[in-house]
Image 1: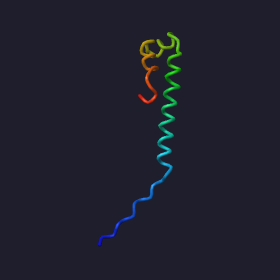
Image 2 (image 1 turned 90 degrees about the vertical axis):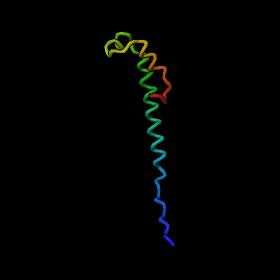
Image 3 (image 1 turned 60 degrees about the vertical axis):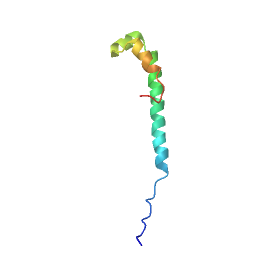
Image 4 (image 1 turned 180 degrees about the vertical axis):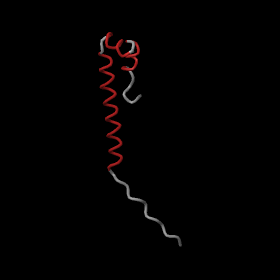
Length: 65
């Protein structure tokens, strides 16, 4: 009979680390989109973004990049 290899032991923290990273990205997106929405027209012009583009980006759900 062939010997059965033991399954490699997994680190239980890795799923939590991945979830933590995703959560951090989502929080950063929300923060950046709120800041973008509050920029003045002059500031938007300086960075080459129209008010319409800024509002479109700001209205995206946090899980969409």
